[in-house]
Image (cartoon, rainbow, N blue to C red; front, side, top):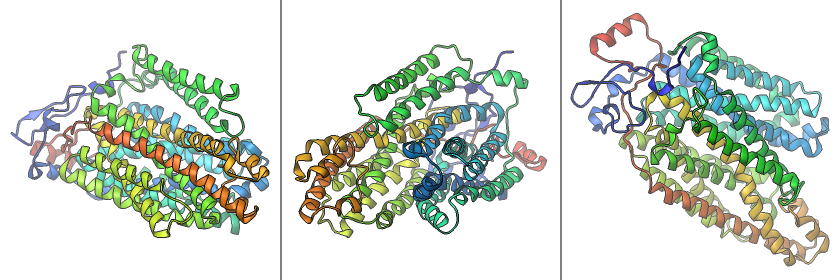
Length: 578
């Protein structure tokens, strides 16, 4: 039985808001189709976009689930010492975090494809159940490897939650309106990221570290209950179960997962356990890059019946630029998140707790930036100027961080963080609509999963790239430190691990000043290069074209309607508007 390509799925006709004629979208990439043509503010189709009780209940359910996913990104950081006391992980503790992130990234394209084949509702609920299962395994872990296995399952669920949330919002909201509602969910997600370290530390200190994971069980149950009752959306049931299973790009997904895992393995130990020039680093790195290349060839070969990342996603220059800039934005975000604390602890000699509080300007400022950008996108429908302003602010903020030293005031470093966070926040929630804009509505799920993959892939590289720059600069300037034992501990990639007030303060006052100057010099290099990365993204924005954002919603996966609502749609001439 032949299976129709996902971009050829039939769509109901919608009323063209400019001349009252009806049109059908059957092109793969035409951004100037009637439903995506520029529409004046008073003709934005707002009357067709109904936000009733079911709509808001789904948004609330997605927000609760996003909080569940976001907490596990950071809650482990402060609970780590307590876990290490109970479980013998040693250097393998890095995989408690890495297993989470690699599964979160590598499985995103598969989940997107499953959403197209089996519909959103059951895939979303299965993903939440998977995350909850992983949390239970982590909480009951009796060994280090059992904990790592649980974290891998958690990571798959967390990445799937973020991805399917984006897909469902895309199904519920016209393209031009999506940013507003994603900004609400993103704010909840950001709160989870911000409070995660405090929640983890409080639970581990006052109870047991196992409750860091067990607390997800009631939240996961609540999310499943809400979404079971209210997430009733359309689906496309074409063919038997066997026919639908055959549509899954098993080989492509397998190659992509293997390549991503190999790269992360290399990056996990490079510069710390093994030198970058070691075969332990080079072999998995080269195998991983070869795997990514093999994946690209396989997807273009025509062999898979339904590629997990079809080539048609990249036929428009805007999609290509946004794809690259999504990677760069992810790198820039973690670049600042991981290296500003080094400044606090190794140069200003803050405790780890105070360093955590000192990151609050960065954690908080990104949320209003995302909200302002989302509202602006909805009001004017132009993403190019938003992207330019966002990346320009990130470039300025990182450049200013290159001026940080031991005499910088609290007001100065707080403002520098706010500028970076506003820039990243401005961009983060407007990249996906820009990537989706040149594509047909039938490709929204696969586009979202592809975009989610590259964002996660960027986070994998986000620590490795600045770490290489940082360690190389440390080695170049190591002669600044007169104490031989300090030089031995700081050289060869040890400076990042030793970046704490307790390490610096064990030396004499004169050596402490030398070490602080050494860290300052290395951080200057890190932030200057970060500003260059952000500046490159800013220049790439100039290549984008402001593809009109559709204001009419055409989807087969919108909220299911009762008989009365369907009859009213037919009477009024509306297609699948919700």
